Structures are given as C-alpha cells and as structure tokens.
Image (cartoon, rainbow, N blue to C red; front, side):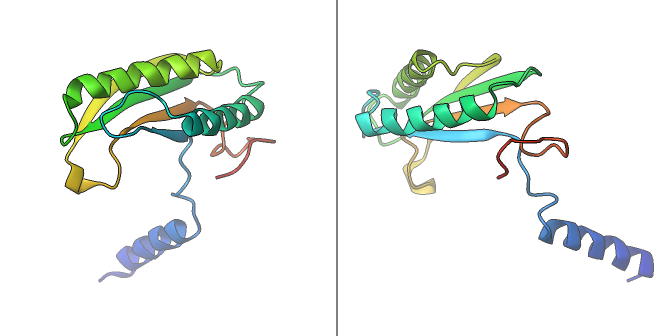
Length: 146
C-alpha cells in the first residue's frame, strides 16, 4: 500500500473515531403502537409531549428551513398492514399538530416491515430536520449536542 493511501485511510479512521462523521442534524422520535391498533397509547402521548417540549425550547429561535418527516409503519403480521400504517401516520401527525410541532415542510410516507427483520415495526417515526443552526453546525451556540 502506498504512503498516500495509508495516510488517507488513517485520516478517515481518525475522523470516524473522533465522531466527526457521527453527527446527524435530525431530531428523531418513535411513537409505538399496540398490535393491530392506530390509537396512540397514553404513555406514548406523554413521551412525545416531553420530546416536543425539548425541541420547542432548543429551536425556539430557529428561523432557517425546517422539515418534519412523519412516516407510519406496520408489520406484515398485522391486520391490513397498509391501512394500519396509513392510520398510524394520520394519528401521529394529528398528535404532533395538537402539540404544536408540525414545523416547516412536511413529508409523509408509509412502510410495511417483515416482523422477523426488526424488533418493533408498529410505530410512527418522526424526524425533525432543521438547517443550520442545529446540533451539528460549528456555530450552534446553545443547541444541545447529540
């Protein structure tokens, strides 16, 4: 291996080990559901309310572009999984709206998972993607770091 290639590989390994490549500028939350249900359990409402409050504080003064991604999920073992994924998406979006946290552009989709491929596909995934300043930007004063 040439000296140049060794240096490049070493630099990449060093960057990865120091967390330089690890920062993801999104804030993520999963709302979990019971089998065959699109009703948000009370415990999940409370967990989501806490997460929303944290994001509203952290991004209260945020003025650049924001995207909220909401995706409904179901497992193949559930009754009518496509309909259920769509109903979960609607329930999750409605709850986020009620809590005052559907921010910026909203992107939605649904997914059906094979039960054997993951621990829990009965959920709604919420991702909030603020442009800088966010937790990954070098000038993000005051925002919590991941």
